[in-house]
Image 1 (cartoon, rainbow, N blue to C red):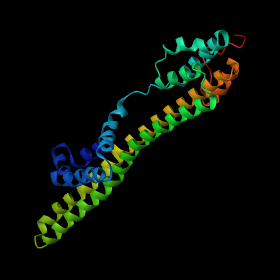
Image 2 (tube, rainbow, N blue to C red; image 1 turned 60 degrees about the horizontal axis):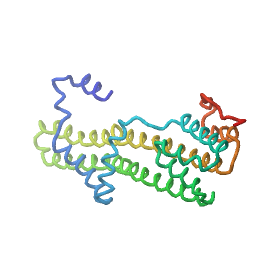
Image 3 (cartoon, rainbow, N blue to C red; image 1 turned 135 degrees about the vertical axis):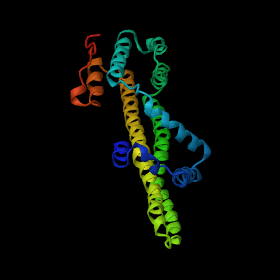
Image 4 (spheres, helix red, strand yellow; image 1 turned 90 degrees about the vertical axis):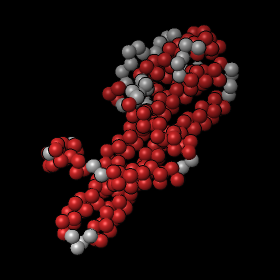
Length: 248
């Protein structure tokens, strides 16, 4: 929409009006280096790399995960908890596999919960660090855009004796504000929003795993486990392809 507005107002032939190297260096360079100054190099690089996660399709499938847990509960109910060790080798999710192996080893339920919730918190902290990177960068964009505008206005005021330069100088000064707004609202806000959405989905999925595995360890009926785990989902999404085996 922004590109359409620019082309519609100025025409393709005049799109160069919106390109200014000095403004870009002040706005983008200032924003990125300000964020770099506030973070460690490893966190900064991890934040930059997280941009690629926006284009990665989410692998979280709540229904499929609940069904896997129900299948595990049926196995444990029929053959005992030790039989889950073989089933764990077929699991793709390392978090869930770790929980299953803790149960197979006979770990105390409270200790199982503590270990898995600690890992859950660590995962969420890593996600929040990447989200904060884009939020911080988004807040820097308009600020450095305004700094660039002020620099341009100073130059314009020094050339007030030449009226023909006032218009172009003002335009260049305002371009930095435009760049800052684009950085914040066209790039940073959408990226941070997508990462927040991905984080919420992954954390909920891991919470489902924790509750499901602890329910299996407690020997609860698969049907009860199914109803408990479906409470994490929205009412319209709660129909599973295969329900728990109540008599298994």
